[in-house]
Image 1 (cartoon, rainbow, N blue to C red):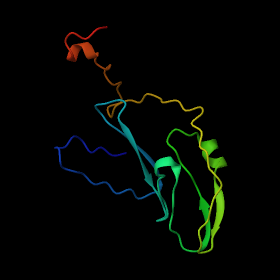
Image 2: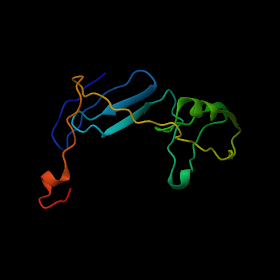
Image 3: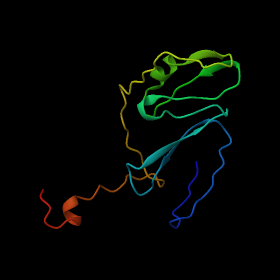
Image 4: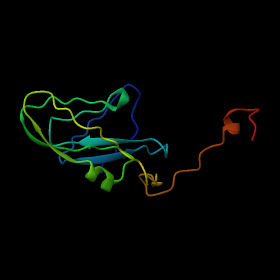
Length: 131
């Protein structure tokens, strides 16, 4: 658990994660603003580009290929794990499809363990707005 508090625009804070895993980060002001940090025990990882394609430059050897998507359920991701062998050439994999079936965004508490205030209605900020 860590808290970076609020800080000035154009500034940054640093946190070092010492154990691999997925770290969910939430905004203490906006209930729907969040991020996920993947702390990985390997230098061989990537994110997909447009169209879902990816490439990883890895030396020859045997590897476990794991995929992850924020909205996919753990059993779905476990079923997509592959054992692969890289022999120095290009390795073409069959298409991998990830389902977000069963995903349910659950509300979370703020850092003080309290509910977030209700979202304001647009009409408060936009005079003349209709209900």
